[in-house]
Length: 191
Image (cartoon, rainbow, N blue to C red):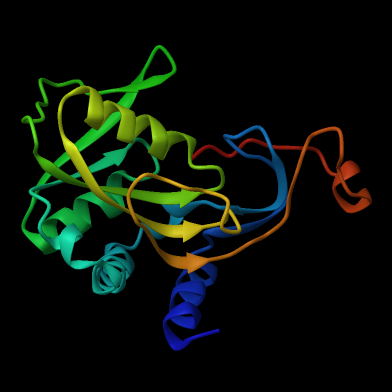
């Protein structure tokens, strides 16, 4: 583990954000580990540090974005802090009829370069919805930045994906659970 990986992992452990048990992920998959990034968000100094580290990894085109957008709920705090540190406009997408939508009279200009910031991806479903939302309004997504990529390289987007930490804890289909998870009640802790 690199020194940055160790620092980030340590932040997740010390804030109680890395949980162990039997979890139902938003994707429907099951896992023995869950990143509850909202727990990190209780400590704004830690969010500030994670945003600094994430920004340091961004490619040049991400710095040229005019706007940062985050899918709710998970990406709200880290997205806002990244936007603050970069001095960019900040928007968030939120659920409407179980799909992400721009509400609150948020607008995206035609051709507007936008950085997408999310907390954790497993399959990247909410990020894909956000990218579709940007495209449908004529915006130009430039980069996806996440705190944790747990996709094991499987999440692919039409723009570069930058992650602060890659943690590839196994995920399972509900009917293919390993013995150590079968006897633990499954919980859905939320994003």
